[in-house]
Image 1 (spheres, one colour):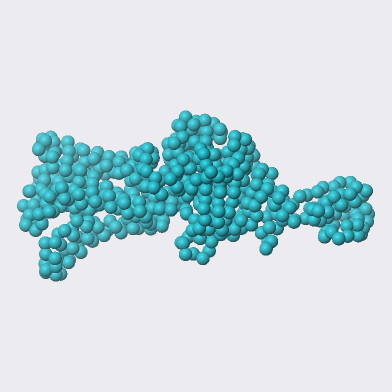
Image 2: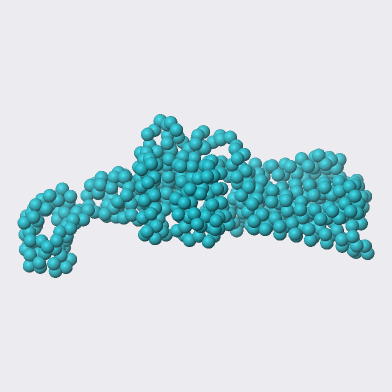
Length: 314
Length: 275
């Protein structure tokens, strides 16, 4: 498929009010996003931040009051409607399938509508580990099995862009790991993945880039590292040493690091926590090299910290 | 959005709807209800006159009409009110609409699938009586009876179309079911009473003959005219020939009105069903 735009997904100034058109509350407020092809892109925000609304807009289920949305360079409800939709896979936040159909029948039904070959259904069931359950009614499926079936449904027709809305809620840790393994595989095949979550820790190791949504606005966008730097959240050094040594550290450190905004906190008799801005990292390390420490740990700010840091930033 | 209609998509949805009703035994249940009632009416409909078994085709049909006119609208409304609002409320609608299917295709697919189920159950439900009438009156009788079955199917399709419209308009399933029952009440029970009241209250001054055309505003009345008033026997019995304007005794016009009742609500539904 040829297209003008290099982005798999491109939103420009998208605004959408809640409910009726004239409502004052905005579900999305002037949102602009670019997701390059082949990326695993995270969309984070607390519940009600606008993540699901954004997905629905991208899918063309609702229309923005302002702004433009392009999927692979095409308007989603434009003349290339069917081509655009075929290139999309969607796993909704609250997945509801037809209880009376079996797993295989479910995939067959969606495959027909999506124009995907019927032969793909069995292969996808196998891929999500549901081959044995394929002949059973979805009514009997556990939450995890439903989610896997929904994921298989999203993969019908080998879409180039996958939209996964909170796909791991309700999954156990091992299922979550399997799920991300699948995503890595897809990404290696060049599929673009947009995944939303309010569990920040889950995304930070895995995404290429992310956007943070808060109250319908994108409050930050970029790689995890770039966001860390932008958020100016301090690094945390955890120093372990004999209590007497720690006392020396507490008295000497502020003088040694004059000019840097540092904060010290004694957590335990032999554990001291030092917070300081990223730019002083090497100075601290150089000074600590001569200290008699039994252990040293450096913590980067988590995505969680960054999120709250950026959300509170003006 | 101008995307041409693909029958493949309509068929996929219709096939699922139809198969769902076969599987959950809806078709079977309705067919059994129709079979039992139609046999009872055919056999015992003239019991009051001291007779058992079908007396004449036309009187049998006249008795069946009074059953069908209550039952089929109710069944069709209950079948269809859930079509769209049910998927919306359960949360499966978004997943469907995210596929390469237009809203019109989804709507038509739903309608045709349900229409297939309704038609199958109606036709098979009236099949036993057809056999009975054939034994008794041979082919001559079946012509009228076939007309009755066909018009019953059309009546069902018209109310199904109205039900699908409600299903698009209503915000949730509860409202949709309430509206469906209200519509049944209004068209099947209240409409005729109002019309009659109007005539009597104005001493027949209001509109004169044209009042009869108001009957076209109700698919249930179109069905009644199609069956009762077009049967010579019955017309003579009720002395109706004199009061009906000529257009209303033309089957073609009546059938067209019925088709309009099928198409118009669906068209309105498709117009209202947009992002």
